[in-house]
Amino acid sequence: MSRLLREPLAPLIVFACMMTLFFVAYLVEAKDVSLLFETTTSGFWGLLLVYWIIADTRQRNASSCTDFGFLCVMFFPLSVPWHCFRSRGWRGVFTLLLLFVIWILPYLVAMTIWITVYGR
Image (cartoon, rainbow, N blue to C red; front, side):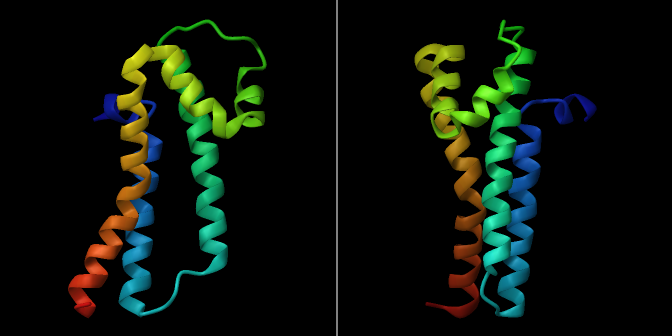
């Protein structure tokens, strides 16, 4: 179990599970998702994706410059696909797809529960 928690994707998966729980809580209370929640989660996704890039680079023992984390933050939207293709070649497409699934899954679960509960 502790080996699984040391994987670079573990924080993203845990955060996606927490988001799912919060979305379900909003559905149970029949309230709209607050703007603060949306802003906070989008910011955390960005930080966790940069953390994943840095942790994945360290796990793969890839050499990087000392300002690697700063550069990932500065070029954030472009740094994710760049890292996937740089570290994995064309298999990076599968990694990007996995990251997309982790990102979209809380929304799909919440939408499915909403359709089930409210029947629309």
